[in-house]
Image (cartoon, rainbow, N blue to C red; front, side, top):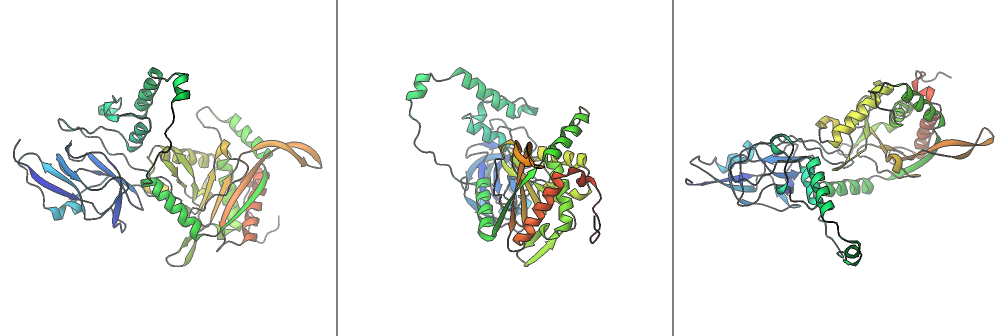
Length: 427
């Protein structure tokens, strides 16, 4: 090996006024050999999660910070020993020249960040870098697997989720404890889990929303018997290539009609300027649970979509969010949010407002139960709508009136598809 020169890589400027970034996880350690453009660390700002690639090839001499630590922009992040005769660039130019992986924004409700995958590169001889996504690295850790020992089935040996699941299943099948061992082996008393990265950001955003927004909660019972009948009819007539309809696209279309009469609920609050920005377009955030946490992709201009178009867009965005393929503008800019736990929806909930919005609608579980209908006891399908409003800007009366109007649309679903009458015209 020829003489080595040192290269000090500083925390790069990640844009949008970022002054520091939190270390989420290191992909390398002192002594490792890395190649140029190989992902070396994942960092998080208040705007995005970023995989930072190595600006040079060389051996890692030292790193700054452990997961959870924050490093200021321009401060030394990692030091490389350059292998060969290539001279190291000046330290002052490192931060400015360093490229970073594509970023995806964090929406105000604190969903998980979508990190654009970094293209894999071949490691230099002796390198310890294993090609895999951050989500799969986390899955391997949670399964108690050393990802460096796995054989990847992806392109160029990339470790996929299926590889981790197969390894975990194989290990479990081959090493199951006896029932006696399971019953007599004491469990650890406590486990300490450092709150870093996404979980820290979620905690901060949720705390900020509850601390600064006076929530007004309102729950209304909705008879969705007719809606269920229409949904079943449309699903029965669809072709096999078309996924079935859920309640969500119906609710979104009904919500766009409702907001025509309640524009004060289709608003974003600019706290810095003290201004309510009222939107004519309806950009509906869809709270989506993913393996990496909660994300809120946005169905833009929902007021222009047909039922099937809305359903297709919901599916596309949800799939993109779960696979970390959602684009930056698909995870921000919602004007009102709808959240649903599906079959786990329970009777009622108190959703936290997705700041800077002023309203959020929650769908609870739809169940059949006996109710009084038309003067007689009948079995009807009932679903509760749980909502929260920013009481600073939406009065309780208006919040209740909005949910009642939404209920009317859902209980008489044909009206969802009728033209909205002009204001002042009796119907």
